[in-house]
Length: 364
Image 1 (cartoon, rainbow, N blue to C red):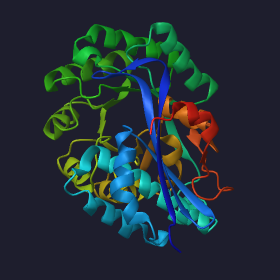
Image 2 (image 1 turned 90 degrees about the horizontal axis):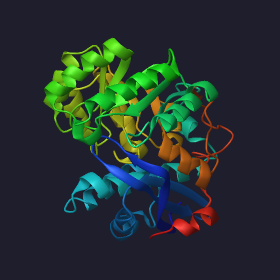
Image 3 (image 1 turned 45 degrees about the vertical axis):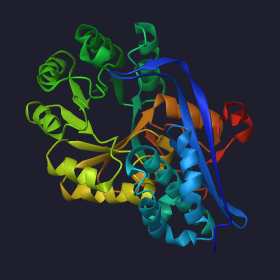
């Protein structure tokens, strides 16, 4: 067995309407995909990153993968990490490594004619999800429509909206949108995500108010995810579950996060942290601290690997990625009773790019 082809591509896909969170605005999402082929079998991986990740992958990672044995994915993952030593591993390099690692696991499971969840070892049959979107740019009507669809049409019993608008400068609107969300979703669990917009004491004050007025359960990145002490401070002062970790690019970052007592639930992103290889290691580190892990975004990529770990809390069913994976891939999963069920009738992760529909969005 030897990989005889590695191909990278990038696609910039407009959002369906302007989007923003507490600290960033955007009007498109870039998908970076990589395919690795061994004879007549092809594995597919992807990440959500700048198009430059494709160029980096082609230049720095493809030479490592060509002629390699896809059964040695952990070894290849380490080789890719070492090759990026002088480039700076966090960010684009980590995203490219993640996409390649995903493609390698997909290739190997397709060669064995197994679904990924069976190759990893199945712990559960389905994966709980939470609806995620509720951008700060949404008006009340748009927010209401989205929340109502998640809870009443798709039967998702937990949802999340963005707060922290204007770097924490619009707290009255934040609280008004939280109140709106509670009215719309009824008894469903309500989560909020500040994307690191607040200061420590501001986050503590808002945490107390959110619990009292709307029974909020989950406070994601109340302060910057780089401020591990600040996260721990908010966590210690509140009954809310504090969550963070989406910007973790190395195993060591997650070890420091849980060691500092910063979070109640760790969010690891398979498209950033190093692919399936590292995501499963993160789950073990988190489990050793008696904590749960949540899959950040990219729901179709997290479904199989999340079903393989015992300490899973849920996977984020993020609006942008759900929209892209449903529109431009074949084999995307649909919510069933607030969960995703990995398709064990297909080998690998069961998905393939609809390249014809993506052609107009290609940027690299």
